[in-house]
Length: 374
Image 1 (cartoon, helix red, strand yellow):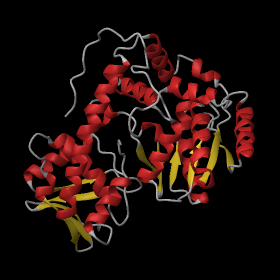
Image 2 (cartoon, one colour; image 1 turned 120 degrees about the vertical axis):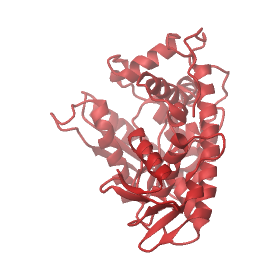
Image 3 (cartoon, helix red, strand yellow; image 1 turned 135 degrees about the horizontal axis):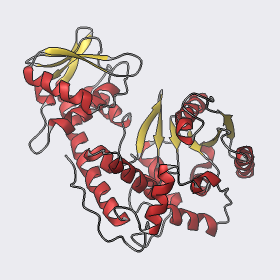
């Protein structure tokens, strides 16, 4: 299910800033930590040195200095990147915040020495530093404008559905036991790029500029410039409305899936079993939207948690399998596929037992290990 995408219409003159903002990054960070991170647990900040991430560092240092550490990942993709690393390290030293600088350059000839190729390496580096520091949460400075750009890129690439429309989640898995938290995407009003910069400048917090942000050959940069100039296919107010409605639908669907799973998922032999009633979407929803959320929670709640990102190529055959009430399907799930077997009674996972313990607690924990829009 999803919104009909409106045709191009008049673009708001204000570009990104649809409403007058009074952003408080400190409040966003404090509220986000209180909402999802165990009290006193260490957190890691991903800081590039740019305006957004320096606002995040300044805010986090004010509200949670004793539990914060920083990681800066230098890919060496441009001249001057070493200077950015030194800038971040020096600023952290001034604030009394521990800082790790990790240098990870994409191999020439692999997938290209580009920012896109570097992203996977960057996420891997963040996960490794988080594990070394015992931090289960990595905070990044993604904000409302990033989410609008991502939504437009999704639409341009033909992606639909509530996950695509909701854009960047506030919480998502990173790797191992670590999760990413975007505090500026939690609650309302969500600050944008200009608002964060104004807050940072008012407090005299320095930053560095990445010259590659001006390269319009990068699709995100081009989309950013179009939004700022009012030349994007949809204006910021329309994009925010699409995101808000998609988030609400996802929230309702996830809660309904979680309630069903808590009462209808149990161990079976060396694996587990999901009752048929859990598999059927409630009135007003459709299997194409319900089954992916079910699979995400199932994967996160297994004794050996598996990260599932169900696509249409998986959901369609699984839906047909469930309708027939017989047959098997292997679902891609990390290092090894997840084997599913359908029967008239429900869905069997012959090799995958659920995590031991109280079913409700298992499902609640699984929720925090999936992507969430808060």
